[in-house]
Amino acid sequence: MTQLTAARAGTVTAEMEAVARAEGRDPGWLAAEIAAGRVVIPFNRARTFTPVGIGNGLTTKVNANIGTSPLRSCMEEELEKLKAAVEAGADAVMDLSTGGDLEAIRREVIKHSPVMVGTVPIYQVSAECAEKEGGNILQMTADQFFNVVEKHAVSGVDFITVHCGVTRSVVDLVDTNARVGGVVSRGGAMLAAWIREHGEENPLYAQFDRLLEICLEHDMTLSLGDGLRPGAIADAGDGPQVAELVVLGELARRSRDAGVQVMIEGPGHVPLNKVAAQVQMEKDLCDGAPFYVLGPLTTDISPGYDHISSAIGGAVAAMAGADFLCYVTPAEHLRLPDASDVREGVIGARIAAHSGDIAKGIPGADQRDLAMSK
Image (cartoon, rainbow, N blue to C red; front, side, top):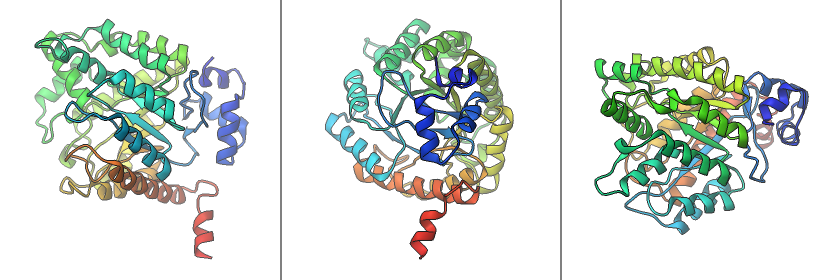
């Protein structure tokens, strides 16, 4: 039984009770929101930690990305970044490692994390393909991908980002629409290249039921990735982005029908005057599913200070109804972040999330502000 199937059966789980207490909400109300797909509790059955809810009527949560690269891989540094993120108040971390012993890194992050953990399985698939001489993501097979997803689920990952909405028809739109920023999502770019090379449908879309079976078994939440998020403010709301979001709405409904918890990922680079509309579009097309946004960054010219433009966009997004903010650090677009960057990024995102909570009237959100003022 997943949190979603339990809620639909009228059962209030221990995790729902804990989230309701933390949020000052009635457990029955929370169960009803989960049953409707407007709230998720990412909580893999293999793990033990304090559960957190994401979605309608709850405080806006913050995620911190950590991870290695092929050029720099150090377990101690990753655990240092994990510690910095948690101490600064992150509600989740994502291990986005692409270099080193990926199995060992993920295992240690999960072991030491007192918060929910997310991953992007296609990064490991790409690394495995690259291990073969002359190999790259174009050699990926569907079985290989789903085997990696299974490994992540068994190891205790609470939510995974999967770019299922990068379909053949959406990739065709990218190829016929002039984009300033192109495809900036790493996972989205990998799948678009695979589709162009093979002329076949994205296996994550074509075999979506296989993904649902794995998630259902482990109660691993799906985070449907925005492979075509705008990487330039000029691309915000363009045809490929909207077409992908329509597909994600369809897949979100299929997920809920199967009993799998699901949230939707969003942009990206968005000018300030379009942020609220982007949030509303996701809520409309995806039936109120929790919205997980990167930033959004409100300008393209802030490298080195992207945590500031991200906090500006994040506050407006949270006020408009975004539920989960993925932090951006001063290192965004430049290099891997260190522990100091992680701390700066989390604090910026937490200020944005809290500002949004006050604006949208989350019960009790302004009490610490009142105490500080007094």
